[in-house]
Length: 400
Image (cartoon, rainbow, N blue to C red):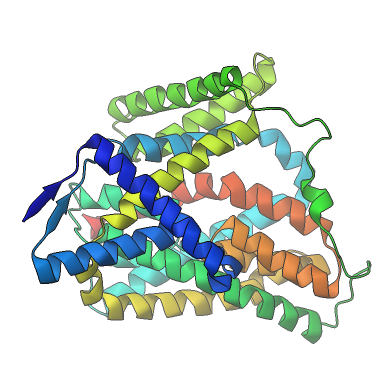
C-alpha cells in the first residue's frame, strides 16, 4: 500500500514532528539535560512508526521533498550571515589558538573514522560521516553532507541514517564527558579560579535593555539577504567547476562575504537575532524531514561498525581535550573550561558546549574568556573551517 503526501501534507508532517519532539522533551529531564533537539526526538519516533508500518503492514510513505534543499541552504546562509569577522578581536590571541586546535581535531576525527571503517572492510564514507561531519558538525552538517553522498558520484544509500545516528550519539556523549574531563584537569593540576563560584553567567549573554523588535519589515530584509545567498550560492556552484564544494558551502561563504561587506560599507546592519531565528526554523524543519524519512533497516545492518567508530571518536576527544586543548590554551583554569566546551561541540553542538562550561563554572569559578571564545568558534567559524576540511577529504581517490 502506497501513501503519498503532497507538499502541504509533508509540511504538516514536518511541523507535527517538531511539536511532538517539543512535547516529549518537556516531559523528559534526560532529553533536556543533554539538549537533544526537537526534530531529533520527534523525527526518530515518526521514523520508527513508519518502519513498523512498512515492516508489519506493508505501508510505504512517499513524502514531497521540494522543501528539503531550500531549507538546508537557508540554514547555512544564516550561518554565513552571522559570521562577523570583526568578532575575532573579542577573543584575542586565544581565539586563534583555539581555532587552530579545533581544526586539528577535525582532521583527526576524519582520519580516525575513515581508518576504522577501512580496517573493518566498510565503505570509507561511513567513517567520514562518523567523523567531523557529525561529531563537530552536528545534525545540520550531517544531514547536509549525507544529502550529497546519496547522489552521484558517491551513491551511498544509508548516508542519512548514519549521519543522524552518529550526530545523536555524539550529542549525548559530548554532554557526558565534558564535565568529567574538566574536573580531572582541575583536580590533577590543582587549578584554582580567581573568582568565587560563578552563580550566574547570564551577564555574558544579556541583551540590551531596549531589545530590537522583529517586525514584518525587518523580517523581509533578513529574508532578502538569505534569498541573495541562495541565489548567488547556487549559481556559483554551477559556474565554479574547478573546486568540488556542495551548494550549501557556497551559500555559507556568500553569506559571510555579504555580511562583512555590508558591515564595512555600513550599507545595512544585519539583524543577527532575526537571521538566527530564520536559520533555526529552517534547520528544524529540514531535520524533521531528514529524520522522519530515514531507513531504519539500513541503519541496523551498520550498527557494529558505527559503534566501533563512535567509541574511537569519544576516546580521541577525551585525550585531545586533555593533552592538546588544555595544554596549548594555557594550562590554566580557563584552558580547563575551554576543554569542557571543546568536548561539547567537538562531539555534539555549541549548546552542549555552553552547558558543559556552565556546569564547570558553577563548581569551580567563572571563566569569562571561555564564554567568549567557545560561542564564537562553535557558532559559525567551526562550520566554515569544517566545510573546507570535509571538501578536502572527499576529493581523495578512496571516496570515488
